[in-house]
Length: 200
Length: 200
DNA sequence: ATCTTAGTGATACAAACGTACCATAAACAT
DNA sequence: ATGTTTATGGTACGTTTGTATCACTAAGAT
Image 1 (cartoon, rainbow over the protein chains, first blue to last red):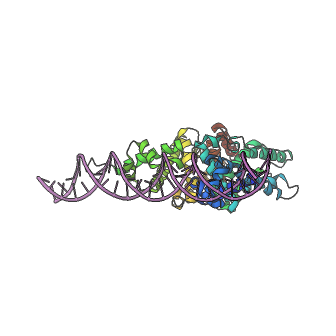
Image 2 (image 1 turned 180 degrees about the horizontal axis):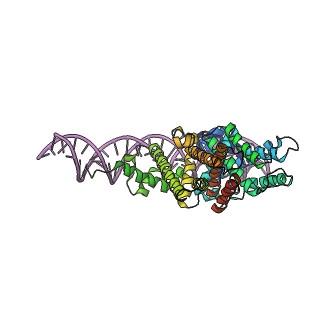
């Protein structure tokens, strides 16, 4: 047989091609042939590594979630060593905003998948769509740390704040994505709200 | 010729069929034939009243925006006669949450259109996607009224609050839509945040 | 009464889709 | 050395898509 090839690696390459093509044309408009062309392989190969389109889409979503997770942790790490809770929270919330091409892509495709999951049960069953968000838990804990350190205003419900902030970040992201708002203004709004949560 | 028919009315009926079909199968999966079947007319008629699919989609979005606007004003009106600013604001923000079938449909299709608008410039040019939101202006004014009446905490930036609340409402709506959160919890989070803005 | 024209039906068409099938080259097992 | 298996290419098939064409009905205009 021709040189043995790393399946996992190949699948990742193809999934990245899917992501690029979807970012250009929209996820709904991407076909197997587009993915093949973008990856520089034959249609048959896409079929070979992913038996069906649905499998490819599912893997694409997982791949995207993985890459997004990496980006978030990188962003948090970039907040410096031993940063205050406020800095970490800011990094966490800002990571979801579409400020550059990569994050625009993330937001675009995540939203695409979310919309698809409303009518596609296979997608709806995927953890990052359905499960109580890991980000929610993390953010709640961070806020709780800040509260314990006396950094927050009195009477703050850390869980309600976490949920609200994440929803706000996602909502702001969408409005940036569709061109309703520019990234700077979205970031400013987020900062304003953090200022209102943290003690002056 | 056969009985003269009200074009505008017919187009509305067909647009409603589009909306229903899209709610069931997802906007990406609905074709002209589906719309025709749902409206109980022939494919040719859909072609006749809308020359192309793109025209149909555009009209469908406008129709949806219209119906949504009506729902919001109805919700605000239902807040009672001469309600306080807080009640109006609550009505405004709650109207966007997918709490029943109709509002689920709204949220689902609006998000679908928003996603499509990222890669479709004809959709992106539509006002309710692109323009500085009317809701944002209205909400800012309402908050300003409340501030002038001394109802808000000191140092509140009404515009930043308006933008943040709308984004939060949209974000919460999406998480309800995809089943990450139930409507009651989303409403509770919204109420909590209003409680933090208004003076105790 | 005749002619025009708005409304409607049936159907045809080319393109694109996901998938299936067949063939072949070459690395591995024996 | 030979047979088996893995990786790949090419291509054909059956659907479905949006759109276009042709025909016909009946209401309004003259």
